[in-house]
Length: 496
Image (cartoon, rainbow, N blue to C red; front, side):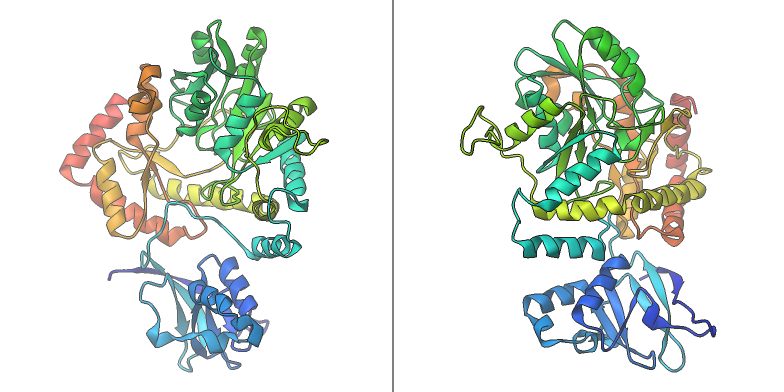
C-alpha cells in the first residue's frame, strides 16, 4: 500500500533528550486504563503506544481494545496499559499512526500514515473533558431531561450568542419545529426558506402545516438576500427562515429591517454557523428565535441535540412547555396543549458543556484546515473556493469546501475514496427533489452550487500531509484532457 507519512516528534526534555512518557501518543507501562483512554481521546487518533521505564516500545493500545476492557470490568483489577497492549508486530496495518524507534527500541517520534485508514469527511472532536462530564452526569443518576448540565448548557450557550434564554432540544430539526409551533405557525401560513439548505429547514415547515416558499440564494453569500425575500413576501407570509450556510452569515441587519416593515417573524437556522458574526453581532442574536444543531458533524456536538435561543421570556416559557408534552411546569401532569417530547438529556448536555468550553479551539482548528486547503488548491485551474465576503461578515468554517465542474465532481470523489479519503457532495437544491416538487421554483444559483460543491474532510486529523495528498489527487484527476475541457467550460459559464 502506498502510504504517505509525516513525522510527529515526541516532546523533548530540557537536556534535549526525548521524553515519550510526556507525549500525547505515549503511555507508560504502569499507567492505568483511564490514563490510556484519556490520552487516546486527547490525541484524536484513538490509540496510544505503551513504553517501558526505559522508553522502549512494548505495544499499542486502541480505544476499541480499551472499550472491551471496560466492558469486561478490567479497570476494577487495576489493569495496566502494558497488560492490555497488543505487541507491535501484531498491530493492524490500517492504524493511522505508527511509532518510530531508535536503535535501542525507544520511541522517539510518531509517524502519521496518510490514507492507511478511512479519513471521514467529518467526525466529532472529543476529549477527556467530555468524558469526565459524561461520567459525572451518569453517576449523578440524572440521565434524562432534568439535571444541572441541562441548565448550564442552556444558560452558557445562549449567553455565547448574546441571547437571554436557551431551550435545549433532542436535535436541531425539532428545535426548528418547536420554534415554529411556539410562534403559532400553521395551516395557511407561508415561511420563506432558502432553496439551498438541508431538508430539515423545509420539512419542519411542512410538519406544522405551513407552506415553505423556496427562494434562491445569493451567488456571493450563498444565503438568502433581503431583496430575494422581499420579492417572495405575500399576504400569507408569517416568518422568514434564513440559513447561514457553511458558516457564512446571511445579511441579518437587512433581513430584520425587512421583517419589521412587513410585521414578520425571523427564525435563524444557525445549524452550520456556531460562532459566526454579522455587523459585529453573533449569528443567532438577530431573530425572534434562533435554532442551533449539535449533530456529530457540527462545530460543537452533543451527538444529537439542538437548541432554541431567544430574548423573549414568554416565548421561552412557551417553548419549554411545548417541549415537555405541553405540560405546565407549575402543575405536574396538567397539559395546556398537545405538546411534544423534544427534550435533551442531561447526558447530552454534559458533553455540550465541555464542547462549549473548547469551542474557540475547535473553530481555530477548522480555520487552520481551511487555510491549508486554500494554500494547496487555490491555484489549481477549475477549483473555486467560496467567494470572499465583505468586512461586515465574519464567517466560520463548518466544512471546508470547493466548487468544481459537475462532470469532474464524481471523478474526484471516486479517486479520493479509492485513497481512503471521504469527500461529500453538497446537499441537493430543494426544488429539484420529489418531496418538494409542489413548492418548487426556478432557483439557478442553488442548482449550480448543489451540482458543483464538494465538502472536504474537516477535522483535527487533517494536517499538511493529508491536504498535500488530496491536492495531488485533485491535480491528477483534473489534468486529464476531458477534465481540462470540462473545467474550462465551468469557469467560462461562471464568469471565472
